[in-house]
Length: 198
Image (cartoon, rainbow, N blue to C red):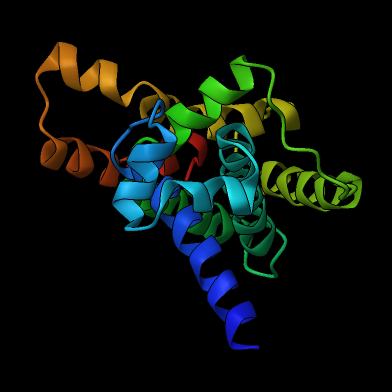
C-alpha cells in the first residue's frame, strides 16, 4: 500500500508542477526535463506515469477545463439570487486568474491546436434553468432585454478576453504583474455595472 500511496503522490506532484509551470509561469513549452527538475524527480518517472509529455500536457489541460466547469456549475447552478450568482462567478474566475495568470492563454492555445476537453455531462438542464432566471431578471427590469446566449457571451468575454491576452497587454502597455492583478481585481465591479441596470 505504501508504494501505491507513493505512486499517487509522485504522480500528483508531477501534475501540480506542470500546472505551475504552464499556468503560473507561462512556460507552455516546458520540456519533460524542466518539469522533472522543478518537481525534483527523475525524468523517466514522467514517462512511467504519463507515457509521454503530450499525455501529461493533455491531462493537465483536461484538469484545467474540468476545474472551470466545476466552478461554473457549483456557482451558477446554486440557489443564490441571480445577481449574486453572477457576482460570485466573476469573483471566483478573477481569483483563479490571479492565482494562475496564464491559464486562459494556455486553454486558448490548446483549443487552437485542436485539443478539446471531452465532457460527458448534458448541460441542457443547466442552461434551461439559467436562461429562465435571466428572463425573470429581464422582466423585473434588472437586465436590459438581451438574447440569453448574448448575455453568456458578454460575461465570458468580459472576464476571459483580458486574461487570454494578458501577456500582450502587459508588454505593450508596460503593466507590471502587480498592476495587472489590481486591474483584473477591479473587473468585477465594472462588469456588474455593465450587465445589470441596478
